[in-house]
Image (cartoon, rainbow, N blue to C red):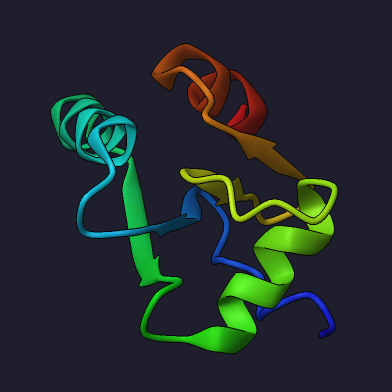
Length: 86
């Protein structure tokens, strides 16, 4: 799969699952910091799971966060997200 559509400037796309505790934590931190994000459940969108696997050495590791510049981080802190967004 090619890279999904890039998020708008100042926002991120977070690939997650409904049962992921790290995902829930990051979502609450992004909400608190006022960082906008689109959430994609990789269990409902197989092509998104394929993308996550390409970023994580074949593993479906979430949260994986896609940035407007096309880069991605796996299980980042909210500080890393804020820094990458500049």
